[in-house]
Image 1: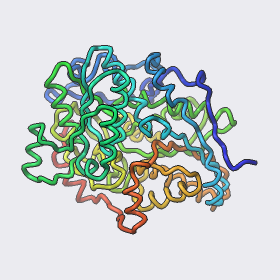
Image 2 (image 1 turned 90 degrees about the vertical axis):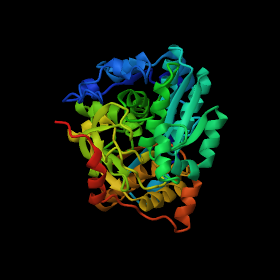
Image 3 (image 1 turned 45 degrees about the horizontal axis):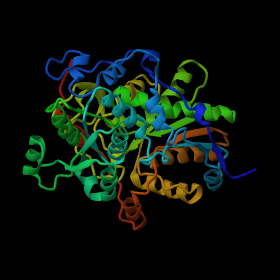
Length: 453
């Protein structure tokens, strides 16, 4: 038998609907709150940030939403994405487990982020918006939005977390190739950014700060809107094409996952893979263990509190019920820049709170050690973010080796690490250290979180 398994869908088999998990939840999702009145937010409260179609998707109770043909047309540049069985990794680990990974690194930007960037830009273009602003951490989201804006003729302005802006210069180059304008955050372009730089000229930034800057610029101009790469319901909705494809691909080879693991920062990659499988689990058609995997330095689910908090640092956004480390939280500069957000998607937080999914945190040196095992067997250098899921998959596979169980393990390799080689250099040279988030850190970070009954 071949050591290589690649499961493909034909173009005509690509899903043409996104899946909305909200109608299938056993308890409704707590609503976002207006930051001034603390009353449930209405569609009008989001109108300065998002086009009407995205607001409707954010609040939708429809189980499925059709993907517009212009979006499918762009998706066809790389979708359906392949599902691989990691036979060589299994052999290295000497495990009876079967490890499958859905590879999203085949997209133009090299990650799963274009799955939502493309429809977000499309809906803004329909409303005549000329420019989108956004934030980005490692740069995967910023480059994806710049790519999508190039497809529909919109301008794109990006605030990148300063620590990542300095550490990943080629991400900035990629954004600029697609026409994006990139600023380090905090920046001198916004009042909030200037206030932070006055206190610390070398401020490392955070995703919350970058969101504040991007939002403030968007609301100041009626021809500009804001785009978010994770956390919100409509973003996770768009990403469910990952899980829907994976269901079809596993069915082709007659497999059903026993364990599903996904790296979890803001929640879009995890929700995109997991929610279609959670639908099947809630319907009694399968029963996988579904596990979120987050960094030990930013353990939103495993250490954060489930309460209402702002999505940004300046307090401009609606309050969302989510697991949070506090909107003032400044994360350690770990190499998985895309997993350094202070809050978890409300939908992911909700299903975790209901006990429908599990969560663990993993230190970064274990992640990179696992990434080397993966790269040296499967050939793909993973982005730092999915190394967390790879580490969790390897833990599970080794547990199967010890017990003799023949489990099927599924994960999403949400991006390649070709522009993250500096992080690998740190690990290979022995300079990488593990960073932990302490209870004292949590207590300090939660001081500014609103107390809402």
